[in-house]
Structure formats: C-alpha cells, structure tokens
Image (cartoon, rainbow, N blue to C red; front, side, top):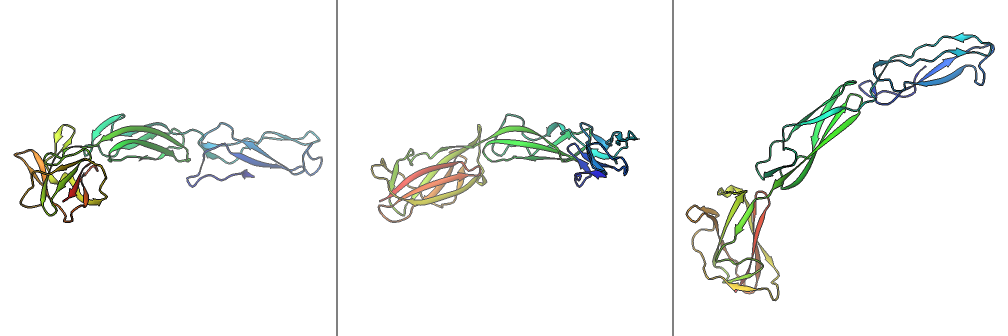
Length: 270
C-alpha cells in the first residue's frame, strides 16, 4: 500500500520508513487478524537510494501461503554528515588585533549516502571580543552535523590624555570658552596608528558635577583650529577642544576609536 510517511522535498527520508502492506483471503481468513489484513514493516537500519521493504510471507487459516513481496524503493539516509571542516578564516584559538581579522571562512563536509546539500558558517564577527563560529553541514535528507571554532579580536589601546589634562576621575577646571589641547596616542598591538580615520568620534557630554571629586586646574590652553590632527613631531593626536561657557557646569569628553575603544576625561567650567 505504501509508506506511512512522506519524504522531504528532495525525495529523501532521514529516519526508518514504515511501509503498509495489505493481504486479503476471503475464505478462511487470518488467525487473529481481520480480512483483509493490513500490517506494516520497517526498513530498519537500511539506508541508500533504493531501499525496499519485504512484506514477509503471509499464511491464512487454511495454511495457504502468499510469497513475500517488496515495497517500492525508498531513498533513506540514517547517517549525519561527517568530517565538517572550516576552510580559511580565523584559526582555532587565534588572536587578532581589530582590523586584522581574516575574512569569513566557508566549510565543507562529507556524506556518503544522500550527499551534502549545504554547509554554512555562522557566528563570524570582526568586532572586539571572543567569538565562536559554527559550521553546519546539511545533507539532502535534512540530517545535520556541526563543528565549532573560537577566536578572539583584541581591542586597540589608547594612551593619554596627556598633560595638561589630568585623568583618573579628576575634574580638570578650565575657563569656559577657552580651548584645551586633548593629546593622546592609539595603538594596534605595538603599532602606533596615525591616521585620523581611525578615530570614530569625539564627543563632549554635559554631566552632573560629582561632589568631592578631585579637581585640578588646566595650566595650558591651546590656540588655533579645533580639527583633529596627528602631530608627527610630538608623535600624538591632538584635538583642540573649545570648551562650552557656563561657570560651574561639568562635561565628560570621550574619544572613540573605530574598534569602539574609548578614552575619557572630565572637565569643570569656571
């Protein structure tokens, strides 16, 4: 009569198949069964692209035998893909500076029965942090197997702000409307970065002045333009920040690099 379930769109089953058979006698009938007699047989552990299921011999109450017949052929794959491998990409347990992460890998796998339909990699990222990629192989029957690989992307390192700005939570006091030179360096590993394009943003945000926070006067102010530049003589970035007016107000100035690393200083207007 046929299989009791349907294959997938590719025509494959991924589990054992039950096939229904029907026997009819019309005279003595079948012991312990109705006439006609409907029964099922399983494909068991068979797999391949032409699996058949034998009904087995059927005997009626009078001892007459009907020979075994085979079902139509089925495509059955009971085995998951094997040997899932990454091709290219970050090495297992690799560590990379931001901006130096290898390109996203692809993957391959083996499948001796229905064949590999696809292999896809998820979890890849160039962002700073720890990442785990998963390669998922899917065969034509819909069975899957995975492999994983982890790696780390390291953040860039800021140094600064240098004098005249004080760090570590100190509120630098400065006359509102004056210009403060913000001096800093940025490193990718041990390599100093000098391109202003590596700086994502410079932002001054008004904040509540913290009572009891250490305060230090800015001794030196700057003149000239306020655009960000790299000073090759001093070996540092310089941004001349024109402070807002408004005595007694406080600001947090944050420089953000393209990897989202930040450096922050606090200021109080006088």
